[in-house]
Length: 242
Image (cartoon, rainbow, N blue to C red; front, side, top):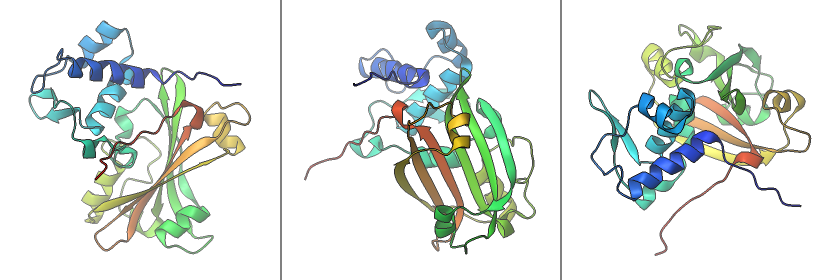
């Protein structure tokens, strides 16, 4: 039996705003309504509005201009249509995201993370695990892993949410530079703890996006494992046929 799964509220709002860009309601070069105006116009919470705008910025429909607000770019080029979940995970500001920090500590490195970081089995890494919520519903479980030696002298071991992205903390404090990202997408069944946090019924898989962020030499500086309920996701890619 097939079930129709409604996309999350922030996705529906992003689709509505995208439609208004395409039909000329929000022309390229103009400012979109403020967060407060969108909250009032659509009757949605501020976190939902913020996530919708972040999604549209990530996909190239909008851009932020300092001192001017959020500007409409118009329909992105085809090459801009690809999902950039990895960039979003690396640049997420914990203090600006609706959700909660559920774990910070040194743990044995998971096998797939060890491979990405080039670490031996049973090595210890720092993990920061954040549960992203939308209107009280868990929508993403984000686990960020760092080599233990790399976090010395940073605030990444702090047990409270941090302002600014984790990437910014590393680049500022350790004088490293993130250069490129590799993403590995797979599906699997969640373990008991993951299913409980994401409020998933038995048998529902998760989509795992493993984000490996490296410097110019190819050395991994951070690995982020983003878990999403698979029954609420849709992957889309657009590309040219030559």
